[in-house]
Image (cartoon, rainbow, N blue to C red; front, side, top):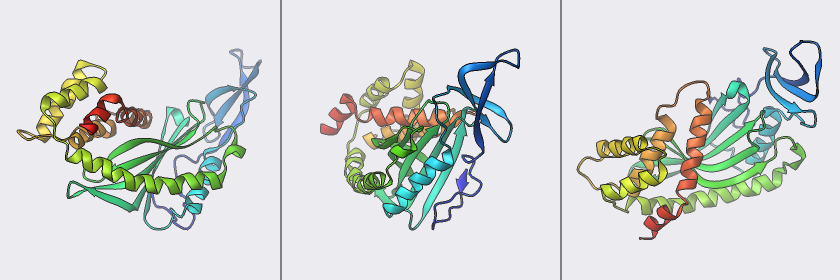
Length: 278
């Protein structure tokens, strides 16, 4: 969902992330006996059991955690101007994914390739993730998302008191500086020419199967036939796969998020850094 945002408050009317949830007992198979020491997280619209936690688990709703983060964005001065918000759910609503795309913080790579600063945020009701915000980019030419490998903020979901708005805002202010510095890195990528053999070695280092290697290599040759691909081109092949490549089903948002994180880690690996230093 791409939300129409009230820029004064960063409210997202009708966001799929905001639905009523509650905690209740869990019954055993006989439908009468309560499971001792356990409680369920229920979707109150459908009364569907979403996940089971121990009774020590304290529910914090998406509304609560994202309202705190939105407040940090306001304190950091990032809510003014053109902010686009994209919301998605996966795993029956247990996992929430949000992108804040800041169109007032754009840069241009290789003459006409426009990127915007992006914050990639996730939260969960199933304990799979704390609230995590990472630095990223959004590439307009093909709607690719990019994880730039930097975790800005991580807050244990069940402890809202641990979410200190001022400290979060300080990290968001730093993100703007990091975003400007990142332009130098991708400028380097766009001028670092590689052979197809070097590109294939990169794909082999990243891919889990030979089939994936062949897929990446073919896509690169189709996009740059007879030319000299750059490290930036290789990165774009990976991010295109992460954003669009064979991502289907109700858990597609989680798949894209995991791929995004894999690429964010990969660009910090030894082999990638060696290419940058060459």
